[in-house]
Image (cartoon, rainbow, N blue to C red):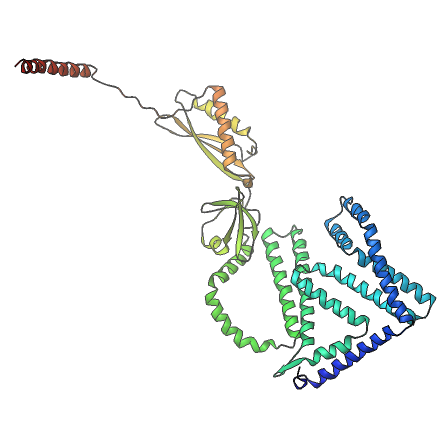
Length: 463
């Protein structure tokens, strides 16, 4: 690399770091207690490996026997078993370091203490990084924190910061260096993790608040999530020294262009906010929209998740729920009235038919029989073949399905009518011939015609 392309500050700092590394290396390679400490550290690593190999099976059996533990404790136990060797080494290193500090000079245990601190830092970082859900972000944060812990143990943080800060470029009044970028990455990782955990805790707390309706719980949870992520974004942007006021004019022009291209998205977003505000639809409601019948599973920023009885999940845009006619079976309450039409023969007593139908319906599960919701049966007309009735009953669990409860009531009516001898007629047609002699006369006339033609045929043959 051409040295003219590298800033002088960077060259001098790198040279200082190399000299410091050489000093450490010479100290380690010098015969005496430093080499003894290196050998002790290597021996501790070997002991940790052997100990982990000998006890892993026993620890695994013990972990499998932990029934009834909460999930977070089991996950923590799994992470500890994965890092069993590092845990043993950390424990052995701290034990030897504490003994040597009491038994001999502190300088004779410096490297052992550094190894113990470094192992403890790596162990803590390995456990803390599990809170980051994104795998790529977790790996990046782990390597950055491990690098920082290593530099901190050997007192090289200031020198490394000087090198990173020297690799920079200036854009007007904005000074951007490699150190600033790394700080922004670490801060963004930490803030995003805190925002995710905070929004999760807020949503769980809101769900447990019975004073808020389900729609307001969702709206408040989304508001907290947007607020936390927005604060994290602003802090990260300001940490790199970026002035947000310069984006005011540009963001206005870009916003106009984006507004035309994202009309549907914005419409769905605003519609979702309206739905959450007016509480017309909330999680758990049973709705009908066109041919879709199901219950609300979740309310999103762009769509509503509706699960049907056959297990299908429809993602309906929020705008459709605002502009279309929606039947909410459980808007003000969960009581739903269902009607069933049937007919019986004219020979059956209508009073008995009504009584039997009501009693049979009351015996069906899910059918309500309380005040104001008792089954009723009325005559609605005299048909061509039957006396027509309508049977009305109520349920309070529309999420359990409507077709199945109608089918159960029909079966109950069928069984009750069979036991009581009540018939369910069906259309019949009778064909009557008014002039019964007409077919006989037609047959006689046809036979006479055939007889008159036969002699002529015979005469023709004789000729």
